[in-house]
Picture 1 (cartoon, helix red, strand yellow):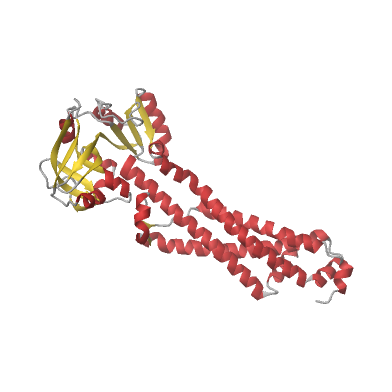
Picture 2 (cartoon, rainbow, N blue to C red):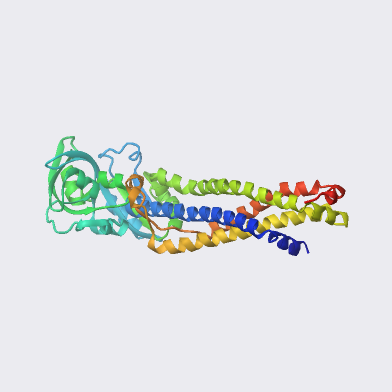
Length: 406
C-alpha cells in the first residue's frame, strides 16, 4: 500500500516531479560520462606506458635507476633475456643498452637518451614500429640507422634520411660518437618521450661505447597478461637476487598514481554532483509536504501512525532519486557506447595533454563496477535527501493541520 500511494504522490505534481527528475538525470549523466571519459584516459595512458615506454617488468643493476651510469650495465643481458623469455606467462623479452648523449643537427643540438636495441626483439616488446609516421622502422638505411621522435625532428629541423651526429662518453671516459642517418620518425602520445628518446641498433651503440654486444643496462619483460605482474616479479626477484627487478608502477610512479587515484577522484566528483542534487530533492519534497499538510493531518487523525508517514515520504523521495538516477545512467551508457568506437577528439588541447602522455583521441570506457557504484550512491542520496522532509512531516499536529486552508 505504501509503495502504491507513494508512487501516485510522485506524479500528483507532474511538472515539479519532471523538473527534479530532469535535474537528477542530467547530473547523473554528467557524472557517469565523466567517469567513462577519465576511465578511458587513464586506461589509454597505462596501456601506452606499458606498450611504449616501460613494458611490464624491467631488470637493472642495483642502484642503476637511482644513478644511471653507463658503466653500470649487465654483462650477460642477452642471456638473461633469453632465459626469462622461455618462462611461463612471459610473452617476450629484450635488452637495451642506454647512454645519455648529445644529438647534433646542422642547425642545433640537444641532450637525449639513446637506446641501443635489437629491432626485431624490440618490436615484440613495444609498439614503436607501429608509431612510425615517416620513413621506416630501421629499414632503408644500411649504416648507422636511427629512429627519432617527431618533436625532436621538428626541434632539430630534420627529416627522413637526414644526417645527424650522436656523441657521448665511452667506457674509457672519452667523448665518442658517430654520424647516423634517420631511418624513421615516430610519434607517441607522450611529447616529452618523443622529444628526448632516440633508438639505434645495439651493435652500433655498443661498439661506439666499447662494450660487448650482449651487454645491456636493462632487460624488459612483457607478460601475456597484466595480472601476472606481481607473481612474475616475485619469481624474478628470487631468481636474480643481484639485480633490481621492478614493475611498471615502480618505474613510472606518476602513471601508477593516476591508476590508484582515479576511483578516489571520481568518487569525489560524483559526491559533489549528488550533494548539489540533494538540496534540489529536499526542496521539492518540502514543497510536497507543505502542500499536503491538511492531507497528512487527516491521514494521521484517522490512524496512520508516524512510522508509515515517515516511510511514505522516504519512499517518494527514493522513487524520485532512483528514476532520475537510472535515466541518467542509461543516458551515460548510451553516449559512452556511441563514442567508444569513434572516440572523442581533444586535439585542440592535445599539446597540453601530450606533455602528460595522453592521446589526442579518448575512447570512453565504462565498467560494470562504475555503474554499480553510481546506483548505490544515488540510492544513498535518495535516503539522505528524504530524512529532513520526512521529519518535518512527523512534526505536524493533526488537529492544527486539519484547520489549515491550503
